[in-house]
Length: 310
Image (cartoon, rainbow, N blue to C red; front, top):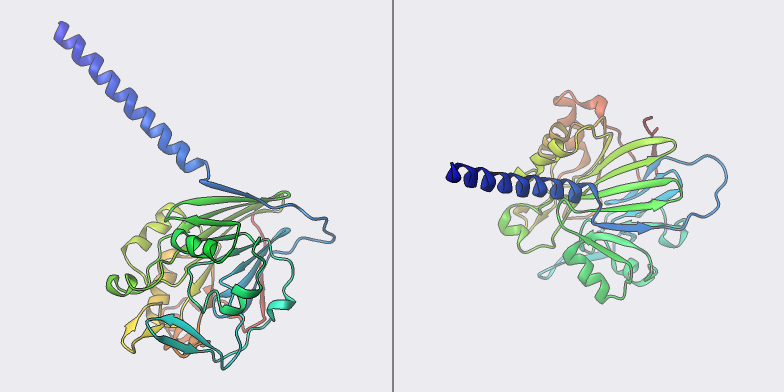
């Protein structure tokens, strides 16, 4: 009997510890790892909810009174970016907006630190106090460049951004530049899930980052179903002429089917010589897959407007 009681007490202790561990894990997923509070300036008129395509992977996202700039690249046609290991690429287009003409930006969302996502002009002109949310490795490099408000995220880590009555829960998604061997030689990359909320409603937006579709990506719709809008980095970027490190048309359709957003917008295509899969290839693949009604196409400078869900 004493042995049975001892066994029961031991089992009770194990269960208590296990349940405590579960509670802790749940709390860890509920509370954001980081917080960022942005002062709310006085505004007039109705809040805007939109995505404006500037070029490459650069978009301006507005939700309520919050304005986010992604992967800022403001070089011009004929300029070159350095991709490491002596590799360069020439820009084929101009940005829709000049850097100096940008409205006030609340923070920059940077998928990774490559020149075609954070170019030399931006490194020179962006205010060092501008908040930047990016990968852990990029955050270290940005601090060395003098940026003072940088948040580095690991996969599935998150930050809660608050401005007035608008709240954004931004979570780092899996991302990988091409096959494992190539990814090891390139900057770490992340996708992002943006969960907005305000008095106007809620909205979930996925940004793929420079990634291919691989096993870890399959976890995203399990954890974050019901994506309203997906911004897909395409282009079929090819290095050394043989290794593809961002989604081409086929991979883009595969991602579209996997994430299953209500609406998708392709970005990061046709802008640099290393982009080998043109937008027309993706348009054709989308049509053949019967998904044309789910995709909106923006020219440089055009804006997609959306409505939050109550």
